[in-house]
Amino acid sequence: MENDNFFERVYAVVREIPFGKVTSYGAIAKALGTARSARMVGWAMNASHNLEDVPAHRVVNRNGLLTGKLHFDGTNLMQQLLENEGIVVIDNQIKDFKTVFWMPEVRL
Image 1 (tube, one colour):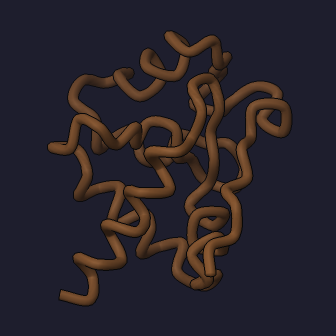
Image 2 (image 1 turned 30 degrees about the vertical axis):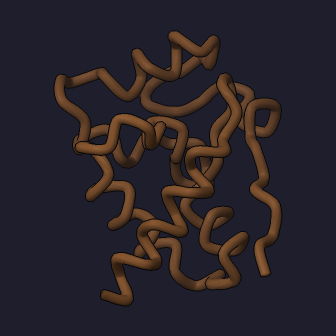
């Protein structure tokens, strides 16, 4: 039960990521007040692929790498979704990562 609530909190943050922006697992964890739970945010993202309203493709690792791409249908779906939003991806890494990075607001 506790994981379900955490996952829902993660999804609420992910739904707020603006079109054409990305954030990281760690930034989401920090915004939720659980800074050391970036891996659990990743688990939530892995479990979100049946939820059409959760733009999981906008969540990457702290260096802008598409570490979650294996959890998307098709080889390059995550990259294609990002590119459809104007984000440039080269060798599974977001170009100009700092420019397209979105920091979620800290939630209390």
